[in-house]
Length: 430
Figure 1 (cartoon, one colour):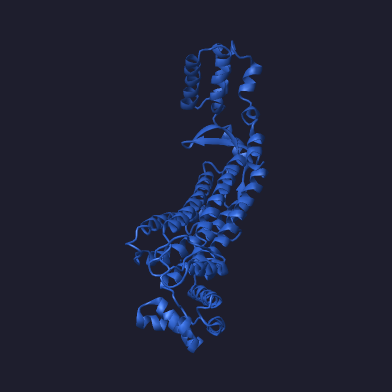
Figure 2 (cartoon, rainbow, N blue to C red):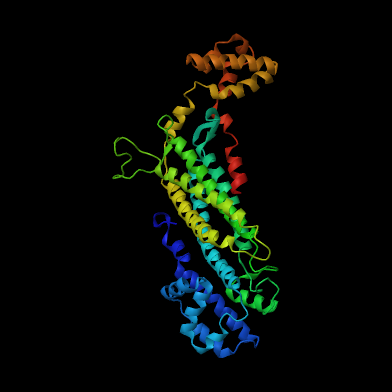
């Protein structure tokens, strides 16, 4: 991922330096474990741990010649370790190291992503409570429907982020596994108890069964979870983009004093952060498709997944981290205009209470079909002729003979529509 969208802490995890450091951690843990079991001399394990060093430039120099990254790595490390290096990589195949080390990188990346999810959820909860009783119009198909509150919009996103957290925790835990079972997963050179102890040293679980590689359904589920997570962020950004439209203007991104929205039009305040969130989320979703393609490998292993994962794991976790931070800041600094929300809510002259009027007429004794026809007639006239729906209703004797002025006032009472807001908050927040 380009530097523009990479936050330093996450970027460091996917650096070549850290990748090889994780490889070396696996090699050292393996040597120490095999020494404990009497397979490798203790002095050799000690030398590998103490003398083993990562020299990225040297590894790349060797790889350019041998065309094999793990051999280049072990050769470069062996140069540092000396004679005891004959016990380096003992009994292991390349993917014992690569897959197990990748699990360490993903574990570290997951901790950062999790922090981002928790932070965003906290910001959403805070602002949901802030606007719990701030009325605004709810829209279906982009058209005014019935009243809601801006707090409920935010609460919906909070609840979704809580589900994202549960899904992410499960996917991250499923990736916290290593394998050191050899070329086809049969423990031809090491033993299952060796693998279990090595993984324990590294803070991983041993995969119950593997081929030469960990099975890629785990990886596909992980990337898919990031895709769902960033789809939620896209959803939030899309809603705010709509609310920032000139005709709506109920909320908008923070716009700093020296910020400029257009090279040609000085008045522009564009939702660039939201548009960036929506755009970059598409990349993570596309990476999910690539992760699905990696599940089906030839027999006990082929290398077709490897090149893909060099791209999709760094890019997806880097973008998830970046977008979580962007979205949390977006919500934290979001400019909200309650007066505009009320103005938009009242702009149709009470049309948004047509459903309540239908119910009140039916309750008062009118057949539902007749009530629907009557209410829709007034609604369509108000819509087409730009009239006040509430006034048309109040002037219709068919309606007023069933509903007194007091009852009609209750029909058009905003607080009646929103009487269960606190209950919804209680259900979500407890």
